[in-house]
Length: 537
Image (cartoon, rainbow, N blue to C red; front, side, top):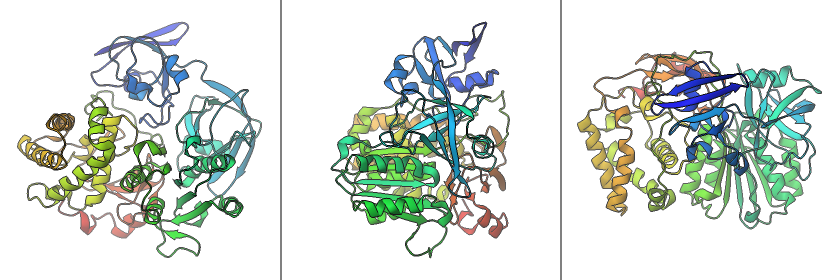
């Protein structure tokens, strides 16, 4: 248990205790101190706090600018204290700005232009946090280009039940004031990449940072080819069609593609399928390309792995995953332990092991061999009925990469939730581990590195081994073991039946045991019955 002193204001301090492995955000909320937060993944930076005294774990400052690091700022959702800390709300981070203009670009996307504060510095494609007077804060990417635009440009997509997005679109008016935070994020044009091809893939308003990056590249007279793939359910989602087509005509090295995920026979000039799959079907070798991914978290997950599989080096992949705060109004259970909540704990990063895996190249080979064996194994294959091997390899690759590097690339369930219904003994877990060791040896990983890999996997034994199933936790609420439930999605994903995009804020049906998501069309079609491919799991 760690001891914290939280400085609320000039006249009030609170003594806070955090449980073992509990991050500061959870500790504060559990003890009645409300601070802003959104994604809980270290992506949005909404929960940023400031340390006045004490040691800050390096992982809690990952992704912050050097200026913020020097001033003791850290991400509460990523900070598991190592000792006594004196902390408090951030000071001097936000500046007040005025709304210059608002314009609906489509039925559900609004362009908002903000007056920039004095000496406001940013790079096209970075994001800012926007805060209204009651303290509610959300992140939005910048579509503007500082070299050519005076105003800061945001693209806000309406969310069903979205507190901030609906307020920005329906209530905020030109002339009103909002608070904004300095720009953050590494998803911006890399000027040293002028001779490298660029591949940009986005869904929904993930187009906002990407169009900023494209304009920045063209402004710097980028010499090589630039390919931008934009994904949506139908043509209504391509809200900057005319502007991008004009840009394409004006610049021979820029190419724009519209990808429709819900229609196998899309209109002329568009492509059928998910944006990332269409992109990599056309670009088989992206070695020494710069890759930019923005939009749905699951698309970013999948696109990152596809990029690596097609030759992109990890340091050439830049992402801006859109993760939203839970739109449901569920209340936290203060009696749940961090283990019950399946908190976002990870073992420490291991850069040496990641290098031994050739920055992911060998990991792909290991997981392909391992799951090929598992899917043919009588003891283990029954756990994966209805789950495609490729999808499982992709998710596990991103999960392990996040553990070893500390990068925020995985947005799926943690092991406790994803294995909640599986009755797995210590003996079966050991058997599974022996197969993994065999796969690691096949690629020539040294025995000391194999030991470190298996120690990393063993970190999650307590979440997986059990004598009986336990309930899946959704938003801190226990769900039954069988049947279907209806939820509002926290983040974007893909329907596990028809593969169409499911947007944040959309209501879906999901199977509570295996966690499969069914969009409104598919749930009506199946009448809340388990589809044939999931029976027997």
